Amino acid sequence: IAVELPFTGFDDDVSVARRAIEDIGCASVVVGHSYGGAVISQAASRLPDVCHLVYVGAFVPDIGDDDAALLAAHGSKLFDGLVVTDDGVAVDPDAARDLFYGDSDDATARDLAARLRPMTLADAPGPRSEPAWKSVPSTYVLCTNDGVFPPEAQRVVATRVDEVVEWPTDHSPFITRPKEIADLVVSVLRPHAEVS
Image (tube, rainbow, N blue to C red; front, side):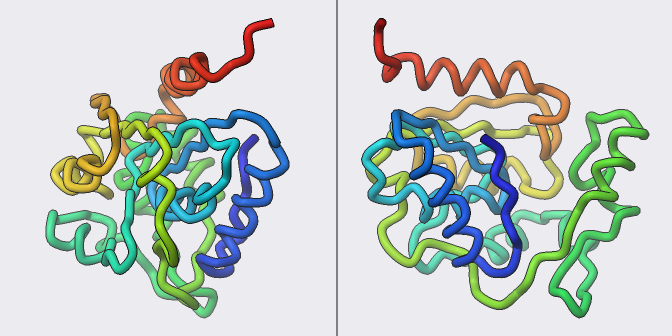
């Protein structure tokens, strides 16, 4: 199930993701990409049916972490592509290809860039209580060609999870490597699947 986050605030995003996880009602693998890592860290917290978390080039925050400072300290290119609007902060579509979709063909990158939406700055992202990664087995997909979330910064947050895999990919491997993502999810779910 792909959850469409409303981007109306971190707490709203967490609520939507948490409802989707609860609706599954059985052993589930929860995957978060980029900012979505912060969302799943809170949304999956204390849900007994979550059996594994997968972070894809994502934040793995603890309470009080400053993710923007982490990006800035490691030379993220993201800040050069941000635009402040009346609706919050957005990514300049002309910068999106280089930032997010470097491994995609031009037509795909243009189509994806056109779908990007602004995010409100109404509330700071990050866990309000113990994040799920502290009690749920977790895997991190480290994207070694990522300019938005530099590999060195990813390595900092990836120390918090149980397993790290490195892929030579841009910030959005689910676009160009969907089979690898699916195979990873299946591999971490398999030990929890019921034998019929």
